[in-house]
Length: 168
Image (cartoon, rainbow, N blue to C red; front, side, top):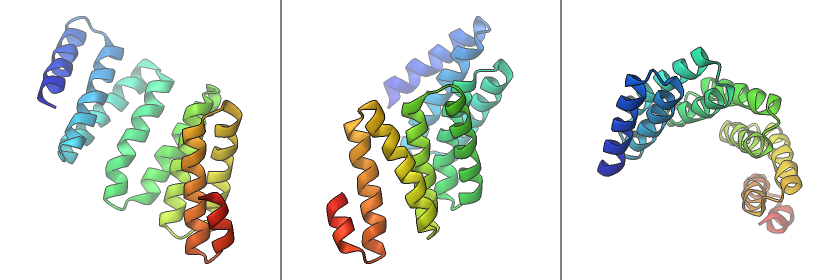
C-alpha cells in the first residue's frame, strides 16, 4: 500500500498544482480506498467526502456516483443503513441517467444487500432481480452469479431450500 499511497499523493499534488479538479477527486478516491483497506476508516471517509465535494462542484456525475458508493462502505460498517441506502439510491439515479448499466446493476445489488441485512427480504429480492436482469442483458456472467448467490441466500434464510439450491 505504501507505494500506491505515495503514487496517489504525488498525483494529488500535481493535480492541485494544475488546478485539475478531476485529478484531485480521482486521487482522493483512490487514497480513500487505500486507507480503507488499511483500516483507517475515518481518514478514508474524509478523503471520499472531499472527493464527493469536488465531483459535485465540477458537475462530474459519474465521479459523484462512484464516490457516493465508496462512502457507503463506512456507513455500512457503522450500521448507518438509511444513510447508505440514500447514497446508493442517488448513485443509482445518476447511473440510470447516464445509461451505465454495469454500475446500475451494482447499485441494485448494493441496495438489495441493505434490504437483506435489514430483513426486508421482498424488497431485497426485487432489487436483486432487477440487477440480475441487467447483468444477463449485458452478458456479465460474474455479476449474474453474484446476484443469483444473493437471491439464493435469501431463499435459504426463508426456508425455501429448493429455490435456494436452484440459484446456488
